[in-house]
Each structure stands twice: as structure tokens, then as C-alpha cells.
Amino acid sequence: MNSTKRNYRATFILDNRGREETIDQLLDGVKKVIAEVQGEVSAVDNIGKKDFVRVTDKKFTGATYVHVNFAAPAAAPGQLIERLRLNNSVYRTFIQSA
Image (tube, rainbow, N blue to C red; front, side, top):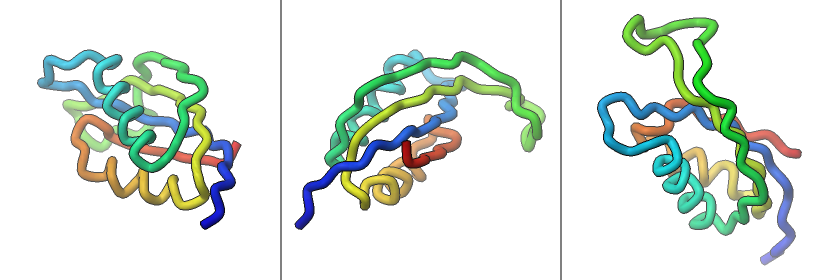
């Protein structure tokens, strides 16, 4: 198995509606999932709450955006998306190679 890690930048849209957890607590959960797929987080940038350009739900017009830079094996982005797909606190996930 090749242990070469690549650098990625992920953008997460976090949804804490109806939850007692703060954005930082939700972000810690995302970091744990990144560690589970053998990723190492190098930087976190909390962009803050932004309104959506295209609103699909009138009751949910904006959310908190967070950029996370991490290094992980090539298979990690797909595994990360699959693990976060069922997580209700992560509304959207965008991963790009850095």
C-alpha cells in the first residue's frame, strides 16, 4: 500500500439548527472523521455564517462555512464524503486538491 499523502482543502457547510452543539463542537466531530480516514488536519478557517445564493428551503437560508486543509491518502476524500453523507450536522461537503 502506498502511504503517500496528498494535500486537500475541504469546505464544509455546518448546520446546527435545533442542536445544542456549537460550531466548534461540530467541527471537532468533522476533524475526528478526517482522522478516521488517515488524514492530518493542518489548518482550519471558520468563514462564518453566509446566506445561500440559491435557497432550497425557505426556513434554511444560510449556514456556517468552514475551510479545512488536510493531508490524506488519495482514497480519503471519497471515504470522507461517504462518512459525512449521513451526518445531519454537515449540510454540504466540497473537497478539492490543494
